[in-house]
Structure formats: C-alpha cells, structure tokens
Image (cartoon, rainbow, N blue to C red; front, side):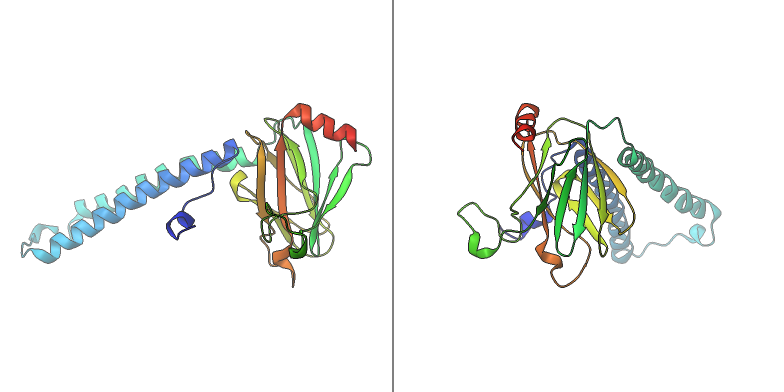
Length: 226
C-alpha cells in the first residue's frame, strides 16, 4: 500500500459513515475554496503595484470580510449539527450487544439471549494462517446481522478503553462504572476491523476488535448453534 492510499478514509460500511464522508468532502471543498481565494489575492497583491486609497479604513470592506466568513461557518455548521443528532439517535434497536473492555481484550454479551457471552482475544503470531491480519484478527468475532438496527452498550472493568470501528464511523469510550451506547447498522456482509483507541496500558495495541456482519438467517443459525 503506497503513501497516497493512506490519505483516504476507509470504505463506508454503514449509512452513518457514508454521511460522515459526505460531510468531510463538503467541509474540504469549502476549505479549499477559501485557501485558493486567499492565495490568489495574496499573489495578486505581491505582483502588482496598484493601490486603492479608498480601502484604507473603509467600513464597507470590513463589513464584507466579517459577514462572508459567518455565512461560510453556517454552511459547515448546519450539516455538522444534523450529523451529531443522527449519531445520537437510537431508533428501536432489534438487537442489543454489550461490549466490555478489559486489560487487554474485549468480551461481548448478547443480552437478548440467555447465556451468550464470550471473550475476544487477539490471535498470537504463532497461530497465524495465510489469511490472518497481524494485530487485527481475534479468536471470536462479534457477530451481527446485516441491515438491522443494533445497540452497542460499552463499558469497562478496569481502565478507560475506546471501542472504535473506522469503517462503520463508530468510536465510543468504555468507562468503568458507566454504560455508553451507540447505534450500529451495517449495510453489507463482511469483516470490519478496529482497535482500542484509548491508551489503556502496556498492551493497548493488542486488543483489536472484529465485527462480522452476516445475513439474518445465518445469524439465527449461529445463535441456535451456541
């Protein structure tokens, strides 16, 4: 993978991540236009000897350069506030999963079913196979049904962790003694990788997260097999 591909966001696997990418492109377009305009004006001022005495201490130009940035901030703020509202909204979840952070692994509890809970440890290097990803693969994936509204309850048993999946646009802190929740809906099947995004101790980089999205029929079969 070359350097330029590292500058892009991961492919979106959820509607929320798609909206975040749209907002990123929207904000970057405005910033590029502002930067280009300023660079053009500065260059034009340096390469010519023209002066306008009427612009010195002129009220009209001060009104323009005060109001113009205000409108630009509004164009950025409105979609940002809309996204914040959507990210905080919880719409009738079909399934609730509790993710618990430990030093240094994750455990998951499917609270809608009886006695379905397991730990998720990173696969050590000596157990790799040809399809394994270093520092990312785990022995037990968090299985979720695709195209379903899912609520993730996140907490911790020791120190502050952070449950983060970049391709799903989700990052939420796991705090001891507190339950944080986040909604999740995955629109396609696959494996989605993440890591603890809080510096939680010596083995912070060895507690990855793997979410496996499968069709609902396969999910029900998996539940029955446990």
